[in-house]
Picture (cartoon, helix red, strand yellow):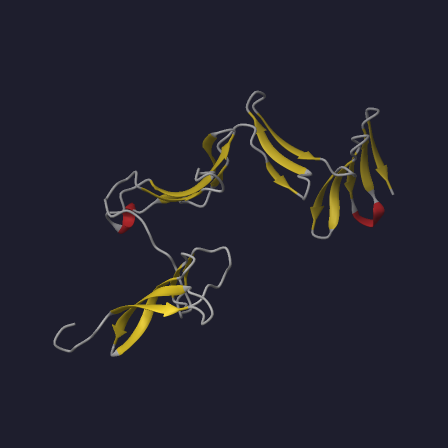
Length: 219
């Protein structure tokens, strides 16, 4: 320490009285109080802000006694093509998915600070970009035919088919497709007959019968 005798320490703490498991603990002087800042447990977990593991399958655990807690990492170099990312390796130490923050400006001034958030996944050995959130907030699906799906069995699909230069909104529900306004259906498309019903007030509906060239007004 310096002339004020402030001290940092590294110590070993036994984790239990009935075994030989121990933790390596790092402490620093905090305004006169020497408090633990980092702990490596006997099973190799790295703990910051806590003295015991808070989750059984988490090897890196970082906590802070505050309203907001963040982990920050990135590049020091100034570059309009800088990247900061996280790789996820689910098996065999091989990357299976990735999240990247990709700069499109060099961040040298406030006006030049634009970046995208990009998501990659691997299929059949190849890792490719699947979703991009632009700095403007626009969401991009960059692969032709890539589907945006909803429902537990992906009953609703929205996608672009490049071979036909056409957008598709496809419903695989048991009763077809409906466009709802507030709490009522405005337009319904029957799954089997493909009849189209436009619902009006007081039970008055326009019905287009797909089996003939007819438009009916019903009540």
